[in-house]
Length: 335
Image (cartoon, rainbow, N blue to C red):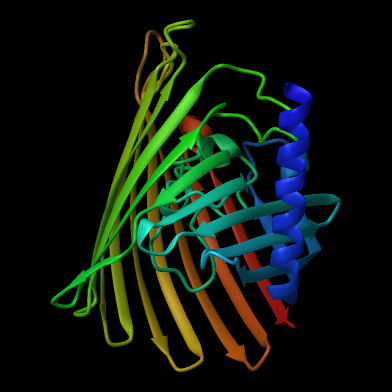
């Protein structure tokens, strides 16, 4: 019986593939970024300090089409190469009209992960490029970002207000996606809900909750929440966001705060951003705030963008008086 089911599913998949291939439109785009960076972190390892010129190349493949029943299929894959490191991310979305959208997040792409840090910036987040992962304040949504499924309800619009609601479920939270035909290595499940509201006046707010439940096996239940507010008035956009994590397995609870302001005039953008990550005291471990600041600018000339960022991090990884300074100049090309 199992073999018959497999044959039937394979035949159905093949039929859908043929049908969608005939109606699919494919696009290919890409980009390249050449960046000069310098890091000064006297309290950290010598390998962290220094200067370097790096090249990151991106290739994006996308396809969309319509099935015989009117449903739409959107497929996306990004291939990123940065130095010796290669990353691949991809999603598959099934649009069901008034029933909403189902999206499979192979790597990243979940709605929860998409609101981890939504502050306005000319170039990147305050923590982007930081080589110390423990200082990253954007922890919300990371547990359900890979190998998860989103259900996104149809957008609701009324009197200039647009509401978007999404649910995320991950069968194996806090780990990478399973291979085709494979399974997750843990029984820890994760789920998240995100609600975003935007008004034509320029005001937007959003909030999310993420839970990781290991079924009481290790006592590792975990909960994260975040909320943000942004306002765009002409060329100026300001934002504020908070996040909190009740960490499982008796770990340190985390707290994060973000704020940013950006000004855009034609092809020129400038911004200033701050973020703080707090690992709360537990046992003999003291609580120390990790503070991040970044001043950025970007200028676009057709397919080329020149960007610069001056960033500073205090108390890296929650260690007092351990500082990290980074300056970066980048030239990006889109094709």
